[in-house]
Amino acid sequence: MPELPEVETIARSLRGTHDLAISRSAHPNGPLGVLGRKFADVQVAWQRSIAEPAAAAFCARLYGQSILEITRRGKFLVFQLEKDWMLIHLRMSGDLRVEPRDKTTLGLHDRIIFNFADDARMVFNDTRKFGRAWLLKDPQQVLGTLGPEPFDPELTADAFHSMLHKKKRAIKPLLMDQKFLAGMGNIYTDEALHLARVHPLEKASSLNYSQAESLLRAIREVLTEGIRRNGASIDWAYRGGDSRITSGCISAMARNAPCAATKSNESWSASGGLIFVHLASRWKKAKKHYCRVIALFTFSLDNDGVIVFLFFTGLISRC
Image (cartoon, rainbow, N blue to C red; front, side, top):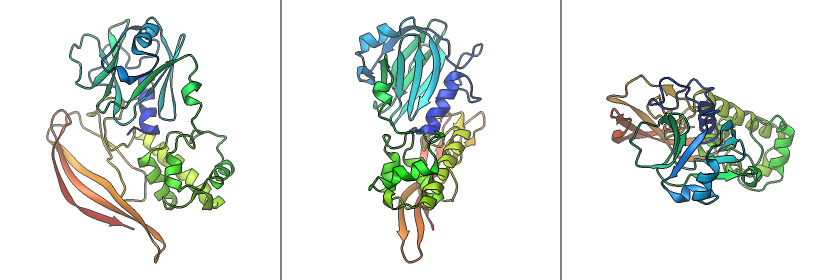
């Protein structure tokens, strides 16, 4: 699932302010970003991808509007238009790509096709059909329930500790609650807790000031590193729309550091690598430290970046 760094990477790519190409098939003679582009017509292949309004009204209202700005709020992509605001949540498997309109072939899982007035289009692809798009007059109808951004300067160590002190929940699910803190998901929450040496099942209210300060610092550190590396999702498609541009990190659970990703070569032919899958975590009471169990898989990819070979290699225990 794309989390804050993956969504931020896509937002920057769509603005044309990121050095990561949105799609290898993007228009070679024009900007990769979509700022300033005007919607001509919109095709909805999966009606339920539109959360609000109805699909017909969604398409009609978008017609003729230009994209003024693209930002991110939590895990939402926020498009400021001339009259409305469009929100897109990628959920589990959503992605956006920009390509020439004369590319006639659409993907099997392309759910919404945004055709622009020029020769480009933006396509929302969503394998699992959980992603949603909204077209609203006031984005706070949806965004208003979100908690603070992790990088909000008003989210000081004092404020964060106060927030935690009021909650009796386990710290991990609390950090993943978008109403408490916007943008965190399973991967970066695990990384931050491990870096701060806080057990996932620790009650939030039990953390002292020093622990809260360390945890907030760790959250910002892993998110910053994730953004710097264009995201670190296990599914490496969340890099702005082209799974072949960068390879997944896939998750550096076996070391006391944020997840890392590496850029691939131009060709993925006969490429391969290792996948680290976090199986379990536990707190060893006797030695007072945190342990992780990692499953190690080996994979190989074909020219299209599809896994064609995968087998279990072994287990790693890290304490």
